[in-house]
Length: 225
Image 1 (cartoon, one colour):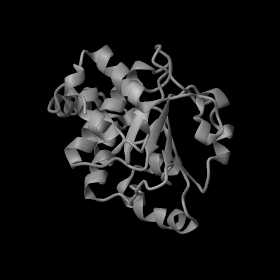
Image 2 (image 1 turned 45 degrees about the vertical axis):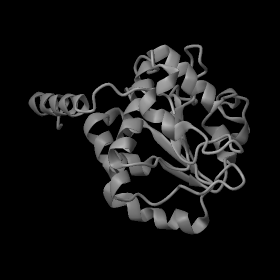
Image 3 (image 1 turned 135 degrees about the vertical axis):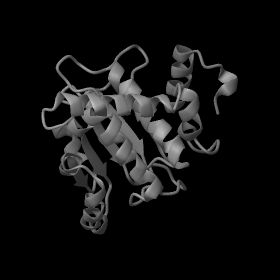
Image 4 (image 1 turned 30 degrees about the horizontal axis):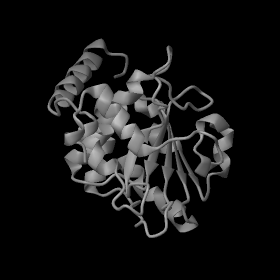
C-alpha cells in the first residue's frame, strides 16, 4: 500500500468484508473433494490440504513454513474452489510461526496422477481458477511469501507456464518452481516433513485427516461426504 496507513486500512476492511460473505468455512465444505471417488482408490482426483499430524503439529519446510499438498488441481465451481482455498488458509494461520507472515507456505503440486486409472486434473488456470489468484491477492497477501513446487511437469508444459504470468502477482510467479520429479524437494523440505511418494517419511492418510478435522470442528459425521 505504498506505506499508506489509510490505503492499508481500506484494504484490510475490504478483505474482512469479503471473507465474511463466505460465512463459517469448515471441513464440511472440503470433504467432498478430499474423498477418493471409488473403493479401489485411496486419493482424491483434485484437492488441497495441509500436512498436519493430527496432534497439533504440521510438516514444515526448512524455512519453517507449513507444507501444503495439492493433488492434481482443485475442481468444482468457482465458489467451491474459493472455499477450499479459504479453508486451508485458515489452517495455515493456526500454524504460523512468530515472525512469519500468515499464509506463507511451501506448496507442493503433484501434477501426475499417483494412482492407476486416476484422471489428470491439473490444467492451465481457467476463469474459475483465476478467481483464486484474485482472492489470494486481496485477502491473503502473506501468501506472496510462499513458494510453489510443481512436480511431474512435462517439459512442454513448463515452457507453456509463461502463459499464466499475466494473471499472477509478480512475487507469486517468481516463487514457482517447475520440475519433472520430486527429487529437488529434499533441498527445501527435511525428509521427516515429506511424504513417502516424495522420498520422505511423513505418514498421512487423507480420510483420517478429514475425520480428525470434523471431530475438532464439531462437524457431525453425517454431514461429511
